[in-house]
Image: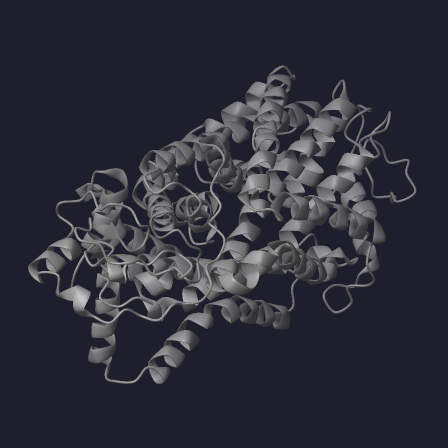
Length: 615
């Protein structure tokens, strides 16, 4: 049971990517067969094994060429291109709409304790692991398993399917933001008053009058603009009758996917330049909105409500589950994005430092977003003369498209701040879309390089077309119901189970010592005991904890006043299972199609990893 990446002393077994065999030489250096780099580690067990064999590996027959050489793998033009791409993926809409809500719901400032602990012992180690795996093996989420543990290759296919499901609904949310962005170019924002054709008698505005009575049937102008103008959800009877397609949203989504295509079609050379705008602009807008929010009357009430600690909440298991889920979905290990983006790094890039820096930026951005949101909620509570908790009830898209726009509409300079806010939402969403689709593109192209590498532009166009067609149901009058269903089941427990199996495969099957030697070969130093313990035990336990809690506690699914029927929950469960089922299906096919006993199959896998046989 060797360790490290299997380093070759026999040059005739060394092979460049693309299948070019190398001629034998008199005094070959140790060459890592994975990346053709000199092996700097004196403790590399694979090299020691080869030294003990006295060069007998050279006597093995050279394998036949694998085919014509492919184009050299792309690399990031600059280190900052990679960092901004990682930050842009990790910092997404969830940092703005979910973290503030989860924080105040689970004890305010006290919530930062479980959040920090879950980040340190669960989220960051998994983030670091994926960056190191992608950088060392230099390939995407599907073919990487041939080098780690071939029987788990179904994990790569599951990741790609989950990426498609996410693209079906996530880009529609960006399309909603684009519609708001366009609607903001007016002297008076259309969600300011109740005097519009789409408003109903239930429309009630807190602002502009002192004697306003709010009842359970009252609806704000911002809520009616979102539901009756943007979505036109009143024309749908629910999932039974989603209605026709909103052509305005169809046009918005087409524009979004056009931007995505021309950002990804040439690979990291183009996407690495686009993120200089899309990853940095949200921080400029957040700071502008924070300054504006801090100057509003009642802002301090929102900040106090946001951070006021409720230490009793720490005794609740639900708080720790929410903290674990938030940090996991925020950092995003398991989606294949970190593997893909890191695979374009130089071999000796310091991915350890990258993991720490980007994780810290992500967590601090979530914390900063809380101040941006709650200063405005405090202002709304002051204007309505109610408690902050009475206006801080919305989460998810409702927070972005109802609560915050309502507050902006009643500020001085509302048009400017509305344009800035929705521009931030669009750029936050685009960054995550870039990362998610790049993970699918890299995985599939690396699996079939000879076919797809010369045709990247066409392949990306085909993938974008599939994503666009898959999103059509979310553009109907009842599309919001479909978005909610896909959001809950498309990447819920399935992605948690996928990354759990990934952690187990790397730590237990590939071997934690072998993986540590891989990291040492890249960085010049091995991971400390803390990281090894997290990878082997704590992080898998952390994921199993979230999965078990999510399966045991499933509240009824609802959106606005609509309760999802039982059959829709069954359909959602099938959607979630459809990606995960790739893993056992591939395992069965692999075992059934490989001759010999399980012990022989395992021996063959070990010999391949040691470099005796190539793939």
